[in-house]
Image (cartoon, rainbow over all chains, first blue to last red; front, side, top):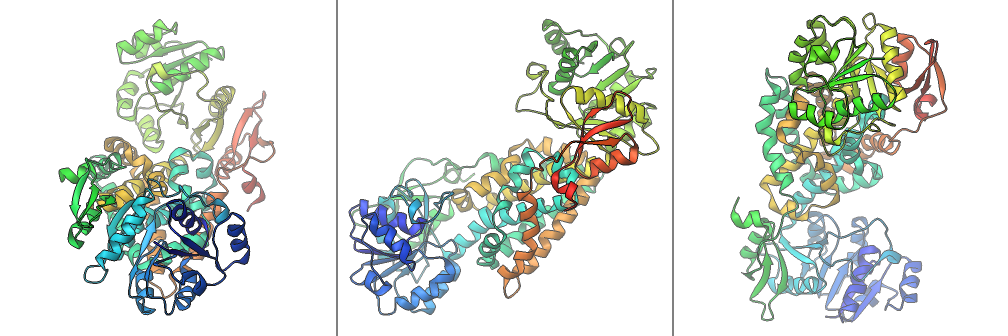
Length: 319
Length: 319
């Protein structure tokens, strides 16, 4: 497959290198001339504009930050091939793609990263073993397009997770965005109590680690996924409020135990262990059920009729 | 100083060994005969009852869990020397000591621990560098007694933190108990969404780590400090509710930044770096001010008139 990658940061640069190493003809582009020079110096094929990069491509991978997407989508006018992206929020990108009239769009989110950023940090092996969300919207996404992308990503070693954009956005609110807000709320209690800072140790350190992220970055992550973050935060606030009420009862310890037990069990069962490999029919409903069960795809069959899949053990047991 | 240690788990056993190594005559006791045998086999002096252990002691260290304290306090009837404890909540222990008529009681809490427990895990060096809270109640605690204990603890290498029981309980609610409840609330969101468990990575792992603690233990910690935990949790809920409101505004990202910035700053300034060493008058008000500033004592002067103290740099600067 002939692939154009727009945006050559850590993720875009790694997609370019991974696909090239896998034998696909690739062309990269980045708005920053210095990044283009850097990629060219490494021997990678780079074009000097979006139209030049996507000319003749079967697939365009948009690997620019969310705020840069509208401009790049403008530059894509006239391109009618398959398009995917790698940004960390999927509902807003879905709407943006629709607004720009992209007919063959499949949102994506590789859950890969590292401490360093930029093309200099890119590596072909970044996606081995990582979960790569590919959005599948019933009555909208072309299943053949989706399977094409899934085959490409599994070939890079990724575990492809089929979900709707809304399901993705709610899940990342739970596992990343809301945790950042809780960490910030905990850390901010120190501002009025230096004594607490002096006594704090392990549970505080871990519970607030991500609150050292730049405020602008946390705000952009949460603000870009505001509806889902708000909804998950409301649920978490409800749970915490219930705990607060238990703390006011005559036997707070006894009252808290049944509230805490499911949480402790859930944490101890994480990360999920995969059960045995399975074959799943390549149908929209089956694929989305797989994703909802916490499962993923490791390969797409040659004929495209089935996918090799894994589900977490607990999901398989229905427990 | 002749010291009796009642309860020979990790902390009590380590206190026994640390004081013995520091040259103090010590006697230990534990309700469990096997623990007494283990300590004796190691060559440590052990008595077979609380009265036998405390006979002739200048100081009794109560190192039993909170639920066992009332029985031990009954066994102390008639002993009129100095008494301290090492449990992790100070208000309830203060009230218990008063109820049992202890006249010379100074609550304590060494912020030390490790993964393993029991006398077999005890070590003389456990308190080197650790914060050791010693409670100082205005118009109640005998300052000379407090300074005696402070000298003993600093000689073991501990950083002695002077605070009231209420200040201690609020601080540990902030840095340990409420973090456990937030971690549990986050972890419990997984129970309804296996997809989130599959996508979760670093920020979820760290933010929920302590939710793998036994539910009974989290409940006992929080329930034993219910009033302070409830109050801190209310404040944190208020902050989170404010964030939830910002998420519903037209520009959630812009609205969140000023709310998040103080939290990020507080986390980045943690752990506090000590400023230059200072001398502080050994007076109740001065000592409590030191503790409130996040400061601690490294030594008590020979004449007991001053203490060597350190304050966090930011506290010194008043920033």
